Image 1 (spheres, rainbow, N blue to C red):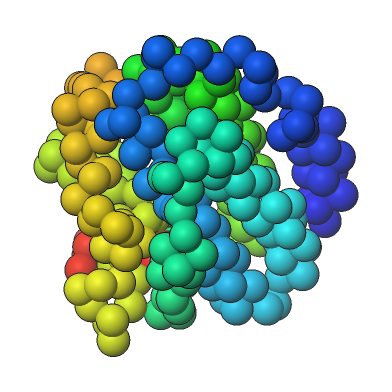
Image 2: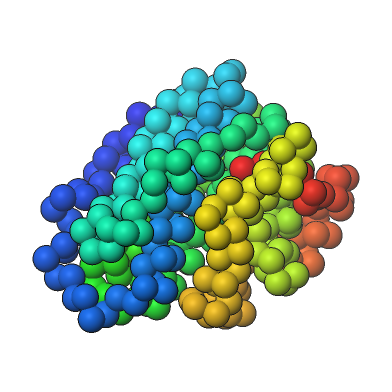
Length: 284
Ligand SMILES: [Fe+2]
Ligand SMILES: [Fe+2]
């Protein structure tokens, strides 16, 4: 069981919404309406941990250890949403998401192979860690900078926790785990090159609800994520290289292979006979 040690580690790292966010340092001159709006959209996106949790619990009914860990993950992700909403409540009340806007991202994903979902979420946490680090630099206002800094550290720890479950999966069923991790690792690492970096919140997850079956498609402004990355954060090639480098580095250690670039991971994936990843319908 990994849950007890992960619970202890995450509890030790936990920050307080009331005491560890420097609310009294808010400087109104350093927050634009444009920036505040991106906080609202990220608050709603973080709320998508709710349907993701429903998916995890449904698809891991045979794994009570992982399901128990999801209680901690769910708590921390909802707290991320709450931290951003609290920021808006204090400093831009007109932009606090409504309950209806939050509820709009709650819809069921199609059942999916759980090892692929695990790898997808590991990569998602790696990517989000870098997005939020960049957001902490882009904002000038000290309170939201501190919030993004706190949250990005949580996302990095979530990636570390998923990695432990990936190690466990490799020990239990190496063939299936290698194929799933190589397939989804390639999909996630290669996506930046196509100009549309993939994340669990912009993947299609439900055939019945297509095309409104991504979290991003349910937001008040479905096109905001690309704008946030391209023109606001300027999440450029050097930033993307940090995401891909982290994915390849961790996969190299995990699988005992040296992946210097996405091509070498793709070659490895082919030797396993892992199916080419389709992007039409993936999972959150
Ligand atoms: Fe989060
Ligand atoms: Fe996370």
